[in-house]
Length: 487
Image (cartoon, rainbow, N blue to C red; front, side):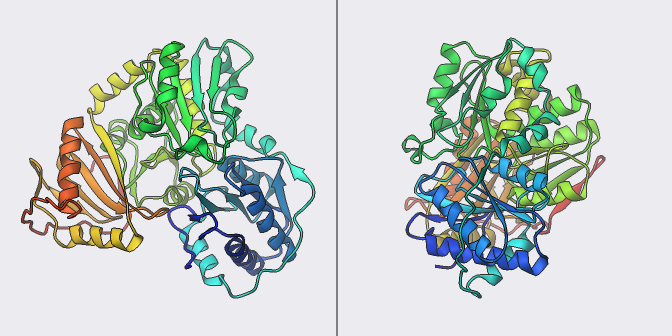
C-alpha cells in the first residue's frame, strides 16, 4: 500500500494496512529523518493509546529507532497524545511519536508524529518522512526495558493555563466521559479532593471502545447526557480516544457543538482571564469566531483543515486560541497543540466565574453573536471517489442551494459555499479516513437539514437527485488568509 500522512498522521486498518511491517518501514523513515538532522541529544518519546496492539506497535517503533542508534522512551501505560507532546518538549527530544488513530473506529490504528516544539508535525516534515519510506530496510534493535511516567511532564503545562485550585474549591458537579480512551480518570484526578465533584464514565480502557468510534459526537454521548441530568451536574465533558478533542453538554443534557465550545472558551480567555492574541479557525469552523475577533479588536486567521496549520501559526504569531471543527482546540501559554482535557478544565474554570448554568452562557453567546445550528455528515467512500465528488462541485457550482443564494465559493480546502450571514456548507474528503464529509452551519436546524439534503443531491449521491443548473462564481484564493480588525 502507499503510506501517506494525512491531516494528522498516517492511519490504516489494523492487519490490513496498519501492520507491523508497515509500522517498521515508517519508523525507519523517521529514524532517517532524525539522523539527517543531527545526533539526538535526548530520547524520543514513543507513546500509545488503548487500541488493539498499540503497545506492541510502539515497542516495534522503539526497536527500529534503537536499532538506528536513536534512544527512545516508552511510557508506563497508555497515554494521551498531548502527554506525548509535553514529554517531547520536557525532554528536549527531536520529535515524538504516538501510536493512535484518535477518534477513528476501533479497527483503525495510526502513527502521529510530533515536532520538537510539541505540536503536530508540519507538512514539510511529513513529506520528508514519506520521501524516505523504503529507502533503507528497517534496522532491528531492542526496545528499552525501562518505562517512564509521562504525567510529570504534562501537569505543569496544564497548571500554566488552568487555575486548578480554584476549580477544586468550587462546588461544581461535572461528569466526564473518557469513551474508554486514554483520557481515563486524568481530569477527575486533577480536580478532586476538595469541593468539586467529578465522576468519570467509561474510564476503563477498551480496545473496542464499547463498539463505537471514540468520537464525542451527539450520537455517541447518550450515557453522558443521561447521567448529567440524573446527577444534576453543571456540565458533561467528553474526550476522544487519545484525548486531544473535546465534546460537552449543558446541565440539561443538550450537547454543545464544537463551535459553541470554541466560542465560550475564547470569551472566557478574553473576558475573565484578560488574555489577548489572535483567533484562528480552520476552514470548517464557525462564523462566530470571526465576530468575536471583530468585537474585541483581535486579529483573525482562516486556515486549511488540520491542527498542524494552527500549530504553525502559533509558532509565528501571538495566538490566543485556535480551533478546528472537530473539537480540537489549543490555547496560548500551553503548547501549539490541542488538548481535550485542558479545554475541559478551562470550561470548569469558566463555570467558577459568574453563572454556573451552561445553558444560559450558550444563550448569551447566541444573543450577542448569532444563533447557528451545525451538522456534519460522514459518507464512507474510496478516497478517489470523494475527490471526484468534490471536484464535481468545484467545476459546476450551484448559484443557489435550497432557498439560499450562493454569495461566494471558497476552495481553500475542499469547496465551501457561502450564504452570507445565513451560513455555509463545505464538501471535503477526509484527511484520515476514506470518507467524504459534508459540514454545514446555518441559522436553524431545519435549514441545516435542507442544505445538507440539497448538497447531497448536488453531489449526485442520491439517484433521485433534482438536477439544477449552476453558474460559476468567483473563487477566493486557495492560500491561507488573514483578516484583521476593520476588514
